[in-house]
Length: 167
Image (cartoon, rainbow, N blue to C red; front, side, top):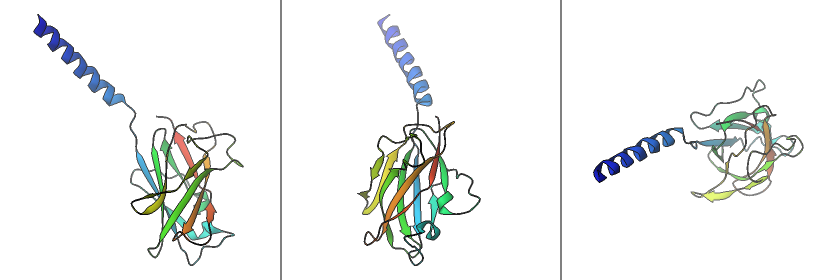
């Protein structure tokens, strides 16, 4: 009798553990790489010298102008976003911060903090953030990326967007 109880309890835990794991929210890491043509970047219009590369499986938002100013991608709640940078000729770009753009977002916050700061990861300064809120039925989330080429000199800022679906 005791063996049957242990067997049934084990079977119960195995079944519900498997079902729970199947429906658990998954975290997808999306890498967004800012690519800068350092010979063409200007303080007045840095987005004209930039474009983005995204990790496999990341859906881009429509961008009829083709400009990095209109660049955007889709993500889901619980996704982790990693922003990194490089130049077209192989130098590195330090991503200094990702900042909530208060001028255009109307209180739509998708990260825990308004200001995500760059940190060193594998010798490169990158920014990481985890999405906590959807933008469904809201405007896309517009954020400022502040970056420096080779970590020195001027800072530049551009303002792409994210559309966040529920999960």
